[in-house]
Length: 257
Length: 308
Image (cartoon, rainbow over all chains, first blue to last red; front, side, top):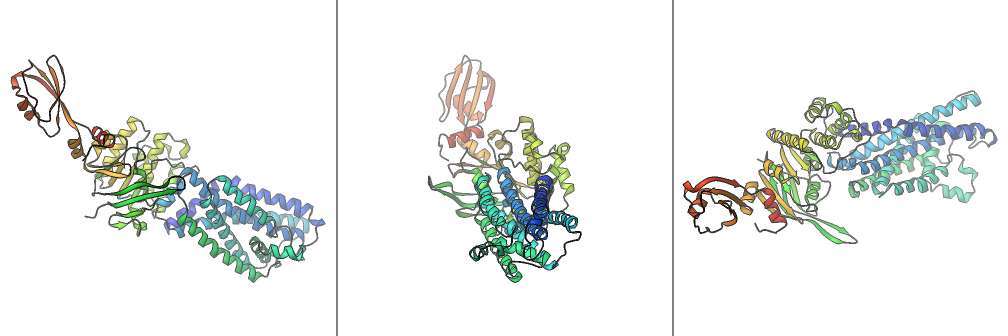
């Protein structure tokens, strides 16, 4: 247990050492999205899922920040460790694969959670300025559920991708060509109800849609996807990426680049 | 008493599309006795680091087994990893944390939460106390090496693996590190050492193994290999040069006026040499001997392929 806590502590300490890069920059980015799309253009955009556009945008941006930062945290930690040789340390010390996956996954979730919380606070301030009230919370259980599953799934995805990556470029490609398009097309900015039936069907293949709509339901009580379905797919994602991470650690290379 | 390390017929084969199957380690067997310093010697690329990587489980053996204090590294790595401290050949740079943080986290990985006393001791003992709040990149090469050693010792291992710990380190620091290694041995830690400084291996190691092209070509007492594979040089200053017949195994290396130099088998005593040459003691003005070294024995094995 001490080994697990030490790695978890180290991973948290690591991103806190570079706070501007890991928390402030993503938070500023979310704030700009909220300002430009939510506050400035929000009044010209029709309501989505029957709610005001600024309110609609806040949970989407929260989940976007959470997933991206969870992925970045574990993947950059592993890739940096490959450069410095620390990854060899991780293999040599008596930590099990389960301990490594859970510690790194949880730390990734914590970083994502901090970014999501900052986004929520900034969004709430904008909402209060524009509408003179506060955004409510539909379900605390759902909020915790989707934050934990989303953070862990993308933390583990980052860990697996970094283990398999043979260079920074390969990891950047995963981020730029897979994660980013899926995030933007996963219902952060618009409800998929605005799409044609064909593209609505295609969108349901995007796993991020379930996390984003799950969090939106937790906060606003509205979603494109039935909440039970979002919960089930998130849980399946958790199991799938846990197995993928275990496989990556068993088969992956701990040697330095 | 259980051996700290038993390596039994270990093989490691790498396969690559270009080179096919390459045998990096070919059936190596040796053991380390409790409390000894064992030197694993060999030229670059001989397989020393691969062997150490297999002991630490960074690599898995293709065949054979490695036991640490009686437990297999393959089936009970949780136990074996706790017994081992390893100083890798290449420095781990760790950019985010200072020395104290690095040692605290490393202690934690081994299940030691509050390890301040040990960390303070190691930082002071290894001359890093004044630098404890620095990042690794702010340290000199020698300090980085010492940090690697502190990391390896932070959880009080019973078996220490030192892979070229003094590579690129200046003489003063090397001397102090070897002194520290001797102190560790006195504390009962068993040590596996790889080094290119054969003089130091000779001084430190009771036994050595010589590995060449993946095979262990010698495993035994350090003095044993020196005696077996090197010769003694005997230089005499004589009042006059008598007539002599060289005894069997003795060679005349040189003669300048009344100074003669012989090469003798290591096991031949000086008395036997004098008797064999029929040199009366009153002719002898001065006599110097120089024993063979581990370096000579090593070169005889690795370069000249001397049989053992």
